[in-house]
Length: 279
Image 1 (cartoon, rainbow, N blue to C red):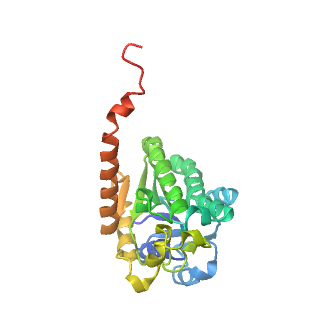
Image 2: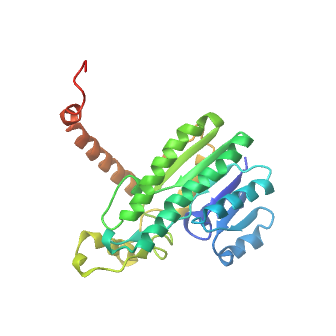
Image 3: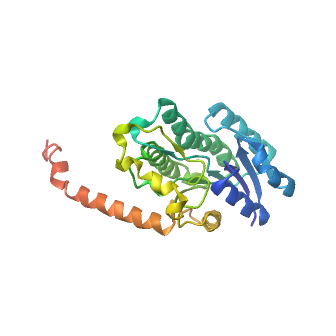
């Protein structure tokens, strides 16, 4: 069954892969971009089923205006995919204030506001599916990725809470946690902070090896990942989380098992701060 999808950031990466596959199978896609030149080929090839919208997701007023327009122009919109985002690498103190504000505005606040904007429309039509592109970096933290992790840990908490709030309205939420993938996100669009000499040789700069294709390509296939994401929109109930990539699953399980083991050592500590029974 074909659907109408609203996807942010369709000019590259997962957004582009999702859009191409959906259009090829007869779906309708409304895709947001900051530069329409990058999707001119899709507009030409699919004039009746692909519709582009200029949008900077750091502009909250523009988000609400765009979302309202999309729902007024289409009989129904079935799926929102929050995909727009980018990576920022460097030690925390190497990042500028502007870099911190921009990645939070794009990767966290932008996604939050997109979800808030579509919810009244989804409730009014009686159904909807929200697919939030996160990362296994929403569960696992590495040095040199502090602000990216801040955004992804944050959006996962937001989305998990919203999932519980809106399930009664036939609205499902899925958080997608991909591992390393061969996209522009990793090999092209990632931003790197200006280095401080004090961090030379520091683990915070280990990302340099990861970003260099000469050291081996990421294992994840963006096309296969996009296919699994599309398939999830038909699953009932909506899976709360989808981990894509063996590297993502291995690292996430190891991290969570270590976290649980650490928590279990704190049983006495936690209880020591309670009022004694009867007080």
